[in-house]
Image (cartoon, rainbow, N blue to C red; front, side, top):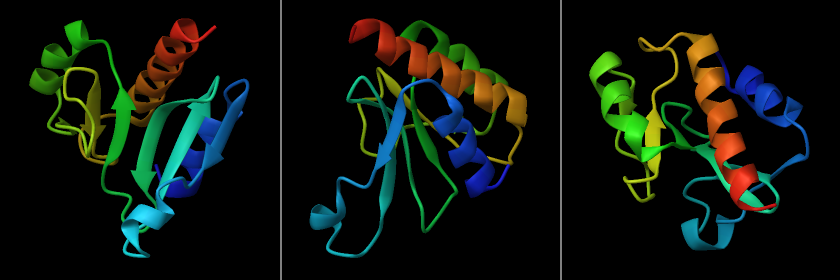
Length: 113
């Protein structure tokens, strides 16, 4: 999956918005694209280096996912109890990645009604 396909999938979920809120902190070194539902982040990645996507996850599922897939790892700048990093196009099928993004979206949406 490429960056545009991934972005289109995220934006296809109901009530999702996107923004680049960290520009002033990075001083132009990188651009983090963040996807929101109910004004809360559920997914983000560096648009200049689409090698890691950070996704919210149920902590109870994280260990199993890390055992099953090399693509799953520690998050970029997130609490590793609730966030994980996914390397697209490694060993995690695109449909599984979409499923994880959908779960992340649902986690955030359900907590912020």
